[in-house]
Length: 261
Image (cartoon, one colour):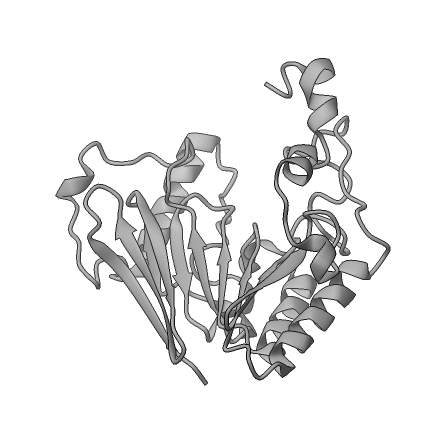
């Protein structure tokens, strides 16, 4: 609708205007900028929200918004270098705080969808500060990478299988095999199948799919499924666990358990 009604809606909602104005994030208190990057502390957990879209060299939406329409400019929320300086300082402070048991990061884009230089810089920050897990989206499927991927030392969870017009779900999801190992069974093959389906629906836009194998730093997924699902995160003092639940009946599809180091 924003594109169809450019004058009435599009120009007023460009540059993440709706996101910045409709929710109250912890940006000001954590030294972030608007809602574009911020962190928040809850008990012994430090949550940090990344800006994967703008304000760093090579960011995909630094000059144009989602869809890359030249008439919808975007980006430019902080001074040059401000975001990455903030992120490094925020993670360093959290890592040095003895009351912080876990650092959990989130952002829109996964590591493999970032330019290599930025991905490696981000991975180095994660590894240095001990980020335990990174939640992302962008791809409309579920893909999990182990902590050994990308050099980040953090498990990456793309929790994008909650439903989208980019994913064709089987008419009877309850007939799919389930169990703790079902999602991780031959994950690269499942991932390739999903990418091929994406190509068929969207004219080959992902002909060189970066979500499967042979991608940046040779990362290969540990689990992948297109089953309609949602995740539950349970954070304790000594352990963190994430479970992927099949939406129709709550059956456990994938499980990750991390022990505090």
